[in-house]
Amino acid sequence: MRITFVAPVGVVGGAERAMLGLLGQLRQKHTVSLLVMADGPLCELAVSLGIPVRVVPLPCEWLMIGEQQAGAAQLARMLLWRGYKLGGYVRELRTALRGLSPEIVHTHGIKAHLTGAMAKPDGAKLVWHVQDYLSIRRLSRRLLQLAVRRADLAFACSESVGVDVQECFPRLPVAVVPNPTDCEHFRPGSSQVDFDFIAGLAPATGTVVRVGLVATYAVWKGHRLFLDAMSRIVARFGSGAVRGYVVGGPIYRTAGRSQVTAAELVGYIKELKLNRVVGLVPFQADPVEAYRVLDVCVHASTAPEPFGLTITEAMACGRAVVAANAGGPAEIITHERDGLLYELGNPDALAEAIIRLIENAALRDQLGNAARETVTNRFQLSTATAKLLSTYQSLLGERASTD
Image (tube, rainbow, N blue to C red; front, side, top):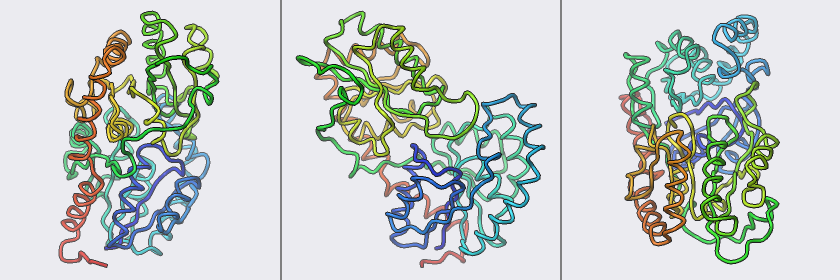
């Protein structure tokens, strides 16, 4: 089977890590390739896995557009003004795809869904891998509505995303494939990485519980919520019993105020008088060491998370996880069994959940052990790969090849 994945970015976030895992599995028995709309670390990692990569750069004007940077009317005017460059890009993308001769074109990200639909070669099947709630993206939903007739199926990263896709595009078949986690790579272990040094904190004395948020600097990832909760925790225990870390960085290039900055976070940490207890750790291309440093891993998104790969990765590392009770995380975690859920956006509820784990090491161990079991049973790479292949074969029917 010949499969080409199309990605709109060259950076590596959670969705891209999941995609690389699938590509690595698929290439063992099938002809796979990756077409990327912007050069970056994603390309290097794919090549290291033996996956052919073709970069077809999306014009900068389009690469920087994001729905959160402007209102729908303003963004619509921007799209019309810049639309003259899109036609040429689609022709270039179509030529590149024809050269790869895929039977399946598998797109990731809204820009890839849209341009992939316009550039799909004759005879190929188009699969959209949806990692967002499209119903809240008004303009993107309308644009994709114009292209949906060219798509043959959508993969959804969670049940809630699958329901959302069906509500937006009732005639588009949907298959739910949760983002997979490489449980051989993400596994329990100790770490020699000194986060206190990296974060500019004084060495801890005595026993401390290390709590961290691993997330890109997107505004909705809840950095301020995490810091508000840490303020309440420090007020409860003092500064000697706990350390907090914000692990991540501004990896996406979308323009506008969709991301917080390190300077803003440092300022808020100082405002809350947490600068001796909480520090920033730069973005980790491979976050496995970050999970191993932490005793408690926090998910703090202030809007429903479509899936939450950092949650399953931390769980695979045997860590106790606290996550918001909405969207994908509520499908992943069974409260009190393999993690703790708290009310979305509530800093008091988040703080209380973390406090429970700070006070109870046995509970941390119990949840961490159960978390590892959950991920190995439900979110393995092999499980997701098998679902992809069976769906591809159903789409291709008698044309399905085994090369």
